[in-house]
Length: 275
Image (cartoon, rainbow, N blue to C red; front, side, top):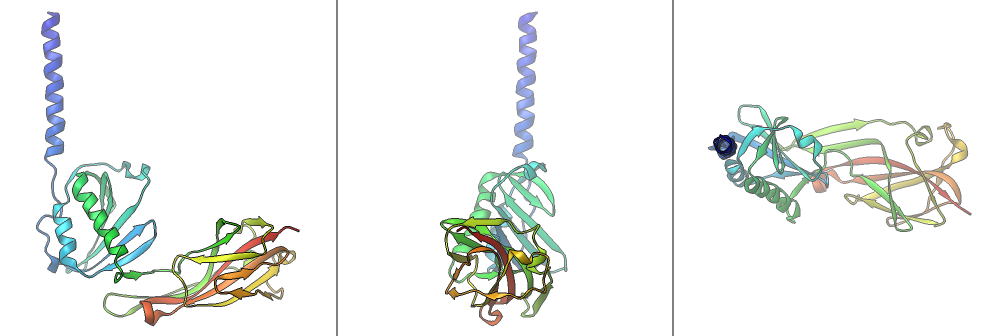
């Protein structure tokens, strides 16, 4: 009797394994047969490094999409970390489809699926190859981030008011205007950077065509946006810090005609130079 029970248990295990193998081996290709003519335009955003690229070779993209295989629904991708590769397709019928390659998941219009590793990896590798190509058309939908580096320590800055343009696939431009509080009204949003150094290096994720101005206010003027500013000396991407606590504002410009995106953006940060 015990031997018979063991046989039944063994059979049940084999049957369960067989069902699991069957489920995962019967994956489907959601984009099988998709033709390049079905896609009017496509972009891919890689995060990190938070850059969007215009895809010009639609046929190559569809070849990768044709090979993608998905299995059961699985939205646990939200618990994973790593690089997300987000494809946005504008279709000939006017609809948009968003595809996120996030191995071992593929997310289609917000719904996650377990996916076959190799085709999904190929899709991600394809996007990174586009990013690293010298002639890739980068689309910045908002101003680049600015980090301030002091004594080999990197700190972020607060993006404030900006006016931004981004070129669309049809040659038109999307204009974005964002207003922000005065730097002196942002005490709760600016971390204090303490240092004994007297210089700081400005590192943009995309270098501006010009730094238009560098201003500062003593921290004695918190919550007093009417206070007069002081000029800050700028040497290329390096600024001179003042002794004591000061709130700094950097204004930079990107040339729209040169890159297909651009505008003017303001950034602020708070540094206390210790005596």
